[in-house]
Amino acid sequence: MRILNINVLPVACVGLLMVIMMIMVAPMVISFSKTPVDVPKANTAERKVENEIVISLTKDKKLYLNDEPISLNILKEELEEQIEEDPYRLVVIRADKDVNYGEVISIIALAKEAGAKRIACSTKKKERNE
Image (cartoon, rainbow, N blue to C red; front, top):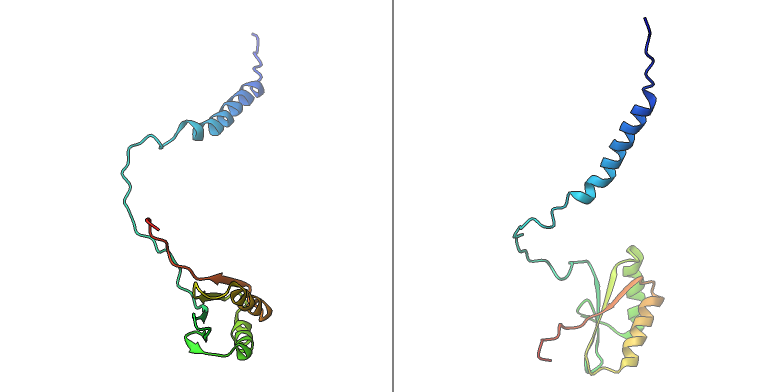
């Protein structure tokens, strides 16, 4: 009587290799991009509401901090006080379109000196025919 020795290791290696190949190829083969689905429409907010600091400069060169009149001398101190709590608090500069560009730049520089890390200039959305 003869005893047969079967080496199982090559069979196991081939089986493991097949499993690995299927794991790698399956995500490429299974795709849902061709499935016809009409996804729902949703409105999204255009602007995130934040606790921001607003500096306004009018056409007649009046300065406001959060809608309160303020002078340029006191503005830096007030900004430093408010920014000290949170340096990443958004500082929004609202300047009239007829205000001199240099005045707006000086307010931006003042906000940077006060420690503001985030500064934005406010604008209106353009209409399509403009």
